[in-house]
Image (cartoon, rainbow, N blue to C red; front, side, top):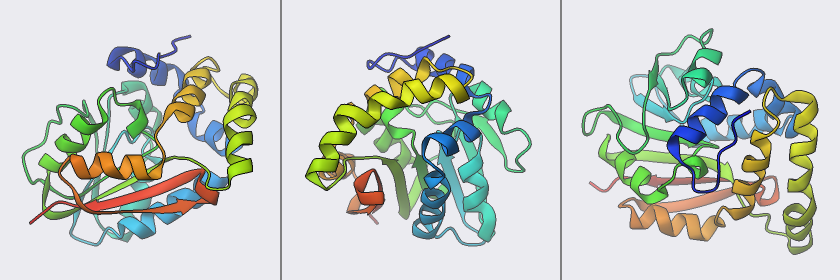
Length: 229
């Protein structure tokens, strides 16, 4: 089965997620012990999408997060580079678009907000993707990123990096349609920058008022920002 490398070649990443699409949501729930639902709820609260707003959910996968954001009446579109993932969420009643994060098929200032849940670390140029997201969001619009991050408690951080991430590929053998992909996913989580470093990348990409909020002791972090007026 396909497995991407840490160079994050777009074709390899797309093929890998095509292969992991079957049962992807179930696998996530098993491997996060159900915390994925809580993280989505916090993401929905922080984004605070309102009726009448237009929201781009980028790297949306099977659109499980998109329907959460649409629950309060916002018009939300799920965009992803993997056609397999979009097909896997075909039963979810939100519009879906195949899209490259570095060259989005949307007009300037088209959205009130853009969000990425556990997908930013799969882009092969993080800052270029953040700049492209800024392009399609109106001035004063919002960015919200939910992503794996760095535990704040030192001893747990060591255990997480040295041991827990190594368990993911083993567990995936029993619950995933593409267990090999979880070697890459674990490696990408291990190499991903910490909260402050990601905040600095967001600011360098043209966003302002950047802030972050830790979930589950920093295993996951929500970063938010606004596009300058």
